[in-house]
Image (tube, rainbow, N blue to C red; front, side):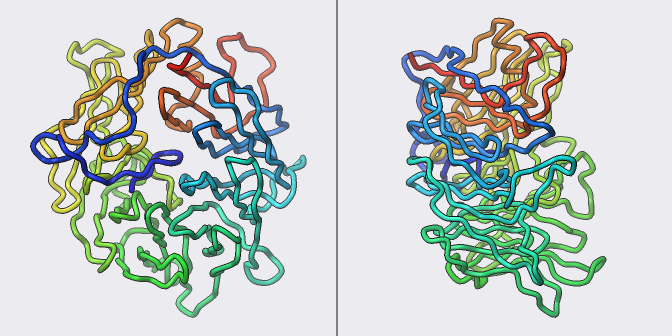
Length: 452
């Protein structure tokens, strides 16, 4: 399956059609009766005394769900009215991008509410949310050695197991009951699980050895026991690795700090998850390709998608055909996970637009086209075989709507699209500025819709 920047989306089944290669054309997302969208609703940034992380947004067929302050809130998917609120003891500090078929999703949260002046609490609670009913189903914590509870920085879901990782090591829980399956353990090699990739499988990124001589390995796990089914040792000079997809297994890394652009990616490793053998390595020159992974996170890659045994990457922006300022554009290209070769077909953004791949949709791609300064953004479906784009939604181009769309830092925002509705949400709530015009207003989330 493939991971989107922020939630959902399982792909990988190949359909018919394609450029003679039998790929794509089998996505669920099709253009509706109209593609022109209107601003459906806005959610204001909650009042906070200090910068507060609000990572996490998800969609069900009825509800848009977004992390709030010491809570997770469900909004009616069309009206934006509050459907339910799940109060939590403290702030959400990690959110899974995967949810179960029946809309249950794990999050991390702090054990107490933040208070001044330090405005920070330990991120040591794991909980399972039911996005259909708006309930916290269970919560748990584990010992990190001594009296301290283990602290976590990310959480995922794979094979019926919730797995959380961080510098204290990794722990896992039965998704249905919250029962502890494994927890951080000290050992004489100094090994610990930094974190996990979820989705169709469960993969651990494990670090071993003394500081300065550490090695990183990628283990495909049995989700119920945590026992490794296979292992791939990352090359020397790799300090972190990010899981892009668990089945097929694709891992990104910055080998020997070759990528100095902040993307944390120099190469993608296509690994046989059954044997742990390397299938192929795809070198992704950071000056040429725009995908990014979190520097120290295991499952925080964006704009790199996996489906149909291919890796899809956007190129960096470059000058458009007219050569005029502000006319930047880019493409999405595809690499084979079997031999690393680039496919001849590519998707063109068109002058002034920049394509950002969001998630797989069956064998096709859903992408956001970041607009030029005088237009609204677009959502397109990219046929995985021909790489031709079909318009699904276009945001309004008037100044007021453009300023709302562009008020988000797009590479830091959460972008969700399904069934003619597009949601943009921020990942931080900040203290409001004293002054500023209406055009400078910031929102927690906005929705554009082709419905109604």
